[in-house]
Amino acid sequence: MRIGICDDEKYIRELIKNKIVNQYDDMDITLYQSGEELTSSDVHLDILFLDIRMSDKNGMEIARKLREKYKRLIIIFVTAFEKYVFQAFDVGAFNYIMKPIDDEKFNDILHKAVSACNTYSTLENEIQEKYILVNNGGLHIKVKIDEIMYAEVFNRKVVIHKNNEIIEYYGKMSELESIVGDNFFRPHRGYLVNFKYIIKYDSNTIYLENGKALMAKQNYPKFVKAYMKYNQKRR
Image (spheres, helix red, strand yellow):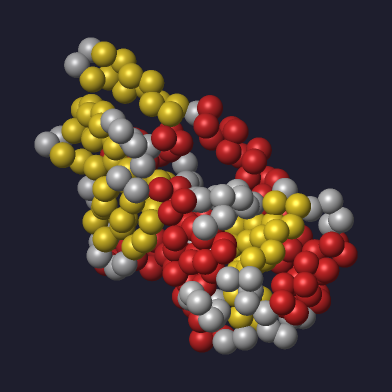
């Protein structure tokens, strides 16, 4: 398991590293002294401890950039400013730690993150094997659920959007919703989105890697809660 620590204070980097080593002495730990160094790195991290306020880049912006590239990265913000905490979940943060760092709180979050990472590896393998069969003009098409970015209703058809493919079939969105599971959410009666592919969102629109979906305003609070649960469910 690879853990990254990004903070422009050397003392904090070393402090967090030592706290991790005290709990897990077999982790592959990489230290980054700036946001630029982190974003330019090609190391694939499983868990990242990220300072929010650094001299070169804002941690929130770094997190958004990383989230576009690494959907499953577990991000734990480290900050001395409580006002940033509520923004953390907008970028799918797993949790946050306040400075000065409390040992008990740190260890609790670290253990949950490691457990989530291990659990996710198992769940990911199971999800990738699940698929649905749809009938398009007599042609039966096998669609892996994990590859569905989002679906929409158009002219009485369900239109499934994948990365480089669109599949249409006559059916009901409610039936598809009942099959795909908790990794999906229906923000609007005409749309069903996969949390995995969300880049950003607001109270009107969800932006995905390959398209966008409408958000019904009355569904926004429920969506935010479900998305937070999705990012934290592996605790």
